[in-house]
Image 1 (tube, rainbow, N blue to C red):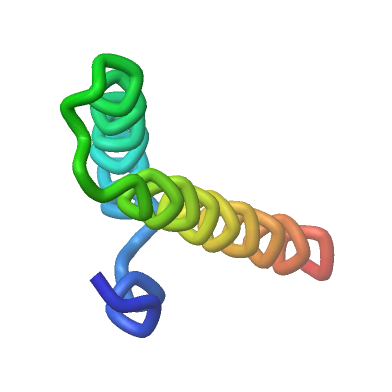
Image 2 (cartoon, helix red, strand yellow):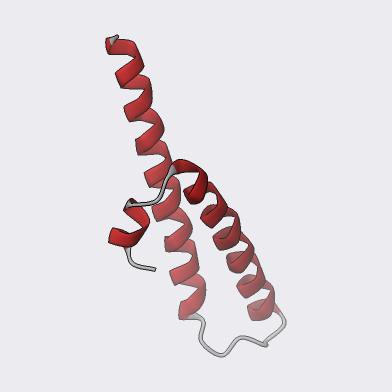
Length: 71
């Protein structure tokens, strides 16, 4: 999924995607440890996907907190 598509999701949807991405990352790490993974670049991509989603969630929460503080 592209970053521009991820940016359009709500916080709840982002949290669901985060759970999926973390599960996928863990699965890939186990496959790599048991020598079942052919393309190890998938691990890096999964880790970066988790980081992107976590960053967006954090940004949204900070924006909400800032908006509440201004009121």
